[in-house]
Amino acid sequence: QVQLVESGGGSVQAGGSLTLSCTASGSTFSRYCMAWFRQAPGMEREGVAHIDSNGNKRYPDSVKGRFTISKDSPKNTLYLQINSLKPEDSAMYYCAAVPATCTFGTPYNSWGQGTQVTVSS
Image (cartoon, rainbow, N blue to C red; front, side, top):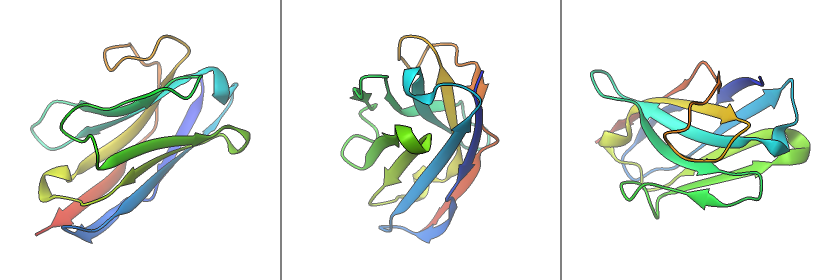
């Protein structure tokens, strides 16, 4: 397993931008499928981006065009840039990792503690 620590969340106004970071340790970061999920109170957890070991990226239609996932393998850091923030983007954002094929349904076995994003209108 890999240990994950998120940062970069905060309170922003609608239309603003944030970049979330997730620092990994404990294993070979570059070999993992890395993903970002979010969960709002009372809602199911939702996958918002994933990137595989080759750098291929996938987003659900709900965030496509506004969310960008990237990684810096030498720094063992995963990023999520979020533009044009909307109130409905408010949630706890988690990064996750698994040494397996990248899908949102993959049973990720490493999770961070989350970072809160709150968007006001």
